Image 1 (cartoon, rainbow, N blue to C red):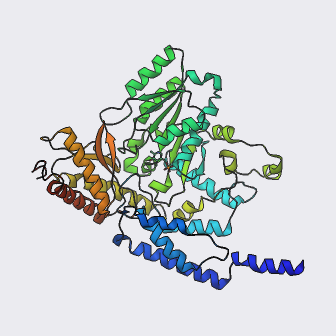
Image 2 (image 1 turned 90 degrees about the vertical axis):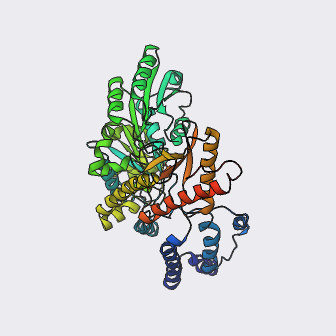
Image 3 (image 1 turned 60 degrees about the vertical axis):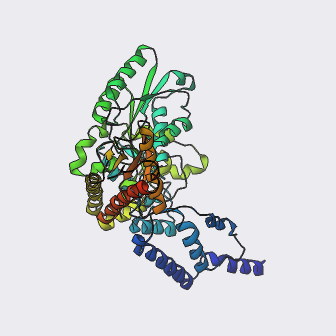
Length: 494
Ligand SMILES: *Cc1c(COP(=O)(O)O)cnc(C)c1O
């Protein structure tokens, strides 16, 4: 047996490595990531997928492993290259994520020390880090008093936790679902539709409140609808609004919605995954009036605080609601329950064992201070205005909405062309931008019409990238006129 143990120990120690092997792996990976960062502006923001990409599927896991250089080469060709490059400042689609290096170092420390951030008893320090980060984020959105929250993996899960908390706060029973009403809008993020279903609330009545002509949830209609529902013996329950919609970056009128929710005793949820944290900026605060009156708010530091993917946060105004919704009982956890100085993440989340996510925000905030984050947010807002101004120099481009934050939609619209032709040109424009790949923009549908949208939120997007975006747009429009429309009609683009 001793011999066998010796042999197995020797083999299993490969997992730990030696100081030399860890150093050389660390250095090689650092070299790779440094090159990645330093060559960012040479890399495309988007590479159309290719047939050859599939070769990744042929790579097998072997008993003996491979050399790191081989693995890095595979990664570079088959993982890093195809598709979107979210780390690129040219990523101007969807809601760009971040990837500040200091957050990766926070993750690295969390992973190497592997502190157990689920339960206070396990790691009081790790839990304090998480709670401190939650406290700071709550302060940023204007919460005070008995609020709390949870660091989840992203906005979708954070929204789900909030919807479940609302359900449990109202102690909804299955037999009441068909008379229970949820209010949202067509520009609400789709993860909330999902959250409603996953929370088992799919049988509730869902009312999609129409938008005003500036794409905000129409409060007058909301009020009328709530009152009608009450008159008809239904039970209004939850209003969901957006502090920055994904489609147009628009902020719903939260003050008025808060009034309504208060008056009618409804749960008021704000999805601020994209926009909520812009409330950190003094000059932007008035746009967010009413947000701090919400019963729950979601913010996504992996968007608006430029962190790598993996951190969305649910904040609940009265932490008791979240505790009531996520409590647990388990005999084998009895030791942990004795040490309760601070609330443990496991008491307010579906997760038990979890990644120590707090580190990816705690370290950057301490290291850089808050100021550079604010500067970066301000730069994005200003770049959005710069881009909007630049569009005025491209003939026949009209904005669908004036930017309120850093997302807005726009379209090519030649007054002399048919609706169908205009739509076609917009479609071609997106396709050509994707083929080109220097910048990546996406499309959406606004009032039934095909539109382009820009979302400026990458910390690596600066004036140079926006100038490129404007240039690409203009060039592609001219090319479309020359090639695609040659036989059709000329002179659509001046
Ligand atoms: C991105 C986003 C979500 C979803 O968050 P994930 O972090 O992608 O899961 C929800 N709501 C809004 C407004 C968003 O922009």
